Image (cartoon, rainbow, N blue to C red; front, side, top):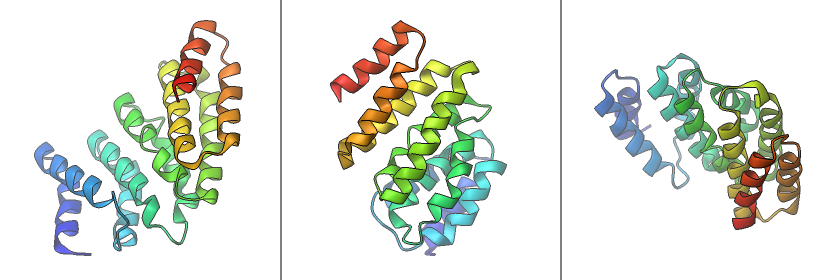
Length: 183
């Protein structure tokens, strides 16, 4: 791991929000392309998903999703449950930051996509009793749409449309369906 990556990892763990923001900016830019240090930070980010404060968890989740393109060993398939757990975070903004980045995993390969789609479908069903259910479901469907736009697999569209049909409230069924009509 180079010095900038190491210092950014330290910044992520800092209590100083400016340092955390610097780490976020560095990691998001760096993981826009495949990088060779993914496994050097993997375990740290995975642990931060559970042990960090809410900002650290949000940043770690987003960076971790970005590492999917640098994961030839497909560790993401095994570690995906840790990310899905963050989508249930006590701080809803943290959960949403994670949810809105998950698509990056689904576009990287069939095994990753299969595991993610299974997790998203389960999350769609289990969130029915949660306070922000409609936003969670919208984010899940948007995540699926982002994957679909990249990989063009009809099974993803069929899955999303089938989930939409399970929504008991016609108002939200319409809202979710409009997302896919524009996609």
